[in-house]
Image (tube, rainbow, N blue to C red):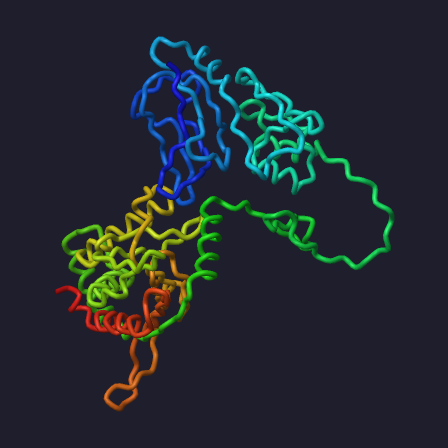
Length: 438
């Protein structure tokens, strides 16, 4: 019996994804556990394994298709003794999913095709019935002034998808006929307002050379979550200066010992910061909290999210139970997580969750900054560069290596006094690093 392969939910919050690549092709044998395709989520590209065995009879969603909703059929698997042709034909009898309210046309939709077809078929005319097109394709066509009725769809059931719009743009075809407007007096050139609901500026809006880079799924989620954070979370900021000369000395001694033991790990200043933050959270548990409409959530473990820059945007892999791990363990774990984050190979449980975040821009020479809270966490610590500064010690002027750290706090869950108490505990650990080795 034919079985539908569905778009999986790769994380609890996932509602849609991009079908990045098919590993198996039509006609290939599939065993349970085989990787059949790769799905791009907002944070990583993940492999999808088959749970049944059979033959891949029909691919319903092509590579590169964006916005595929969870539980949407993406392929058909023919069972044992069933011909792939019969399974593919049976799949074609399934009704095309109904359009969302925003997509519903004014005229009644045409009937769904009786069978799936592999060759592209023309889309229905806008005057004769519904035009089958993905939301992304509709938006791209609207922004580019293309008439969907003039475009041939290559997706399932002749559905117009992203690649069809791109092909039409490249060929210079399917331009919609614009009505002839009466002549108007010339006006000075201005930059037009954003076009379309997404606020997208077109290339012709700019008088200088430039390029437009398509938003990745990760960048879209970053934009959405951080906008919500700044709009909905009442941030306040606390800054403290930490002298790190003792820390730098301890770091060098530890790394010398690790090198002598031929261990492939090197402790960084940020590893000290992660451990100090985790221990400070256990000392000030009121800061290890999150806001929830149902009540304040206080965590019993310090899982520290560490901000990592990747080509597609920022991701925060988690050092779990960092308060219970030594510096060498934190260093090795952070190095591994950061490398896999940049390669898009993290699994959801490695970057979703966390009770507290650390963002360090010290390696770029940034003296001080205020980070945006990563909801639903209650705090994020922004770490600046260590630099030589004049300080007063025992009534005399001296020089010390000082690092400014700023705590961004969600005032709904952490009060100013609690935030200050956390920073005092953190500073004590950083300035006397031997205490975090006990």
